[in-house]
Amino acid sequence: MAILDHVRRDFPILDQHVNDHPLVYLDSSATSQKPQQVIDAVDNYYKQYNSNVHRGVHTLGSYATDGYEGARKKVKDFINAPSTKEVIFTRGTTTALNTVAYSYARANLSEGDEILLTKMEHHSNLIPWQQAAKATGATLTYLPLQEDGTISLSDVESMISDKTKIVAMAHVSNVLGTINPIKEVTEIAHRYGAVTVVDGAQSVPHMRVDVQDLDVDFYAFSAHKMVGPTGIGVLYGKQSFLNDMEPVEFGGEMIDFVNLYDSTWKELPWKFEGGTPIIAGAIGLGAAIDYLESVGMAQIEKHEHELVQYALEQMNTIDGITIYGPQERAGLVTFNLDDVHPHDLATALDSIGVAVRAGHHCAQPLMKELNVVATARASFYLYNTKQDVDVFVEGLKKAKEFFGDVF
Amino acid sequence: MSFNNLDTLYRQVIMDHYKNPRNRGQIEGDHLSVELNNPTCGDRIDLQLKVDDGVVQDAKFEGEGCSISLSSASMMTQVIIGQNVEDALKMSQMFSDMMLGEEMEGYEFNLDELGDIQALQGVAKFPARIKCATLAWKAMEQGVEKEES
Image (cartoon, rainbow over all chains, first blue to last red):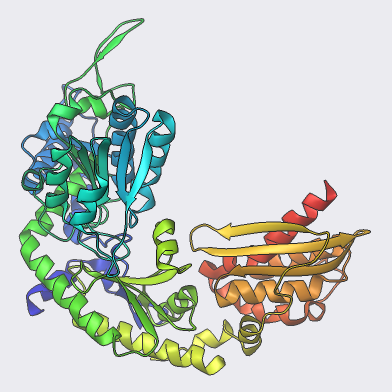
């Protein structure tokens, strides 16, 4: 664990007391904290070279354009996309997935077609498909969850057919921590002529993702979960699809020629970036990628793996705890403690400075599947320590006593 | 490490209502019902009211949620049964003021008349939990509005 000790000092927010206790931030799956390097990059943009991109002849405009397009290049390298044309900046994962659901799905689906999903999807990779299905007459089909919270490839094989046009799933479940076999699923999907759309919000921040190796057709993620700013994310898509897709938003920045009755669009990726883009956000995302690379994605993955395995081990010593999801998982643990409602538990932990998430985690169908109304979740990132886990587990034990006593 | 400041939130009386909710169940016969969710956290309440001649004759609830939301529902049903609609709405306003930590002035009743509900005063210090406490009351307000229209 020592290897990441220096990391903690880069995150100014972690050095504070909450409710008179040192902050233990275990809600990085909701949003991550930001290192000084990212804060400085955004700050520096506004202080030194704030300007609009792609249009000014003036010097600051060039700096801003270089910053913005430089960030795109960093994203391309980070996920190993073949070209910057395939890296579209969006408001976040939700907007990226909606772009595919609007632009690709509505143009390519018709009655009788199927969209294959899993039962562990976040609402953002579920509702866009419900809406696309309603608009086109396509139907949604769901891969079942296995007992341990994973999906099986044989179910994929048996549920997919020539009718399946889209397979959409999370790379990592934000509730179960399950790491889905995207490469294998994509191989099956392609055999049936379907495209894959992957929600990478919980994977890109925590593990090396190579979109060419996975061979996915669309991949979406958000900067704010990977030590970057809020308000920006990425849609990666293969050029062969993006070229034929219509923009979703029209206006400035995305046009080529504009006539009174008709217009043409800029080339990729700009045709999908109508309006003044998220310049500061992109620059912050670029700095976030630099930061993660400086630590090393393999290091981060290893660190989180150790933390989550340690947390599982410690949590399993508590009577009356239910942990959801598989043993081998990404760095998060969703759980319930008998007789303590997750909100009450989260309030109790907050009173000793420990921040966890409680609720349905934007995955209501999954909550129904697990037969719970709400759960609590602790999620880890590169700045968390074994000591954080100890404080958290101690807090769980205290909470059990506290609520046990009052009953 | 201790939960000292939690005691203000989780008073014994709250836990008692959570563990042994009053008026939990279904009203038989004519009644109106309102179902409300807290979409971000999954709390759900199904409140049923029987209002005759402008008076709340009966109130029952079903649902699931945390100790704060369910105890608030339990306490509320206790206090509004027998009240006329106007007073029930005033109590709701008073409760809302209490949650916001505002002075509860200009009401005909004093805090004692709200019964066990006083125990929820501590929730005001936990802003993230206020919407848990007010869920049942919002359902009651909507139900009464339904009745009036």
